[in-house]
Image: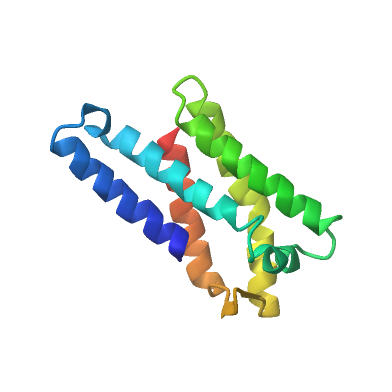
Length: 144
């Protein structure tokens, strides 16, 4: 839920900043692009922090080397977030992040079904997680 809050709050703060005079954030596109980038930078931090063991547990058993997969997806989130902020690469970064969200979704399904916790808290229920995933995909696509 924290990534969703970061996405929404950051977007509205940046839009307000745009309205009061910072021209870069005057349109919704740059505000959304920056908010999505910040959300992915936030989620990437879990790939190396104290939540890392929980993320590794989320990886379905048929995926080889779960620790490596968590590291790779974290790196891809960082690269994608930075790429969104560069006009020349924003479209390809948007596509890459959308694909990453789709590829990682089975881990969320697995975690929900197995009752895996993250930092001692239960994962988001599958129905709500699916709604959030659709919101994240929409935001990522619109940001590109």
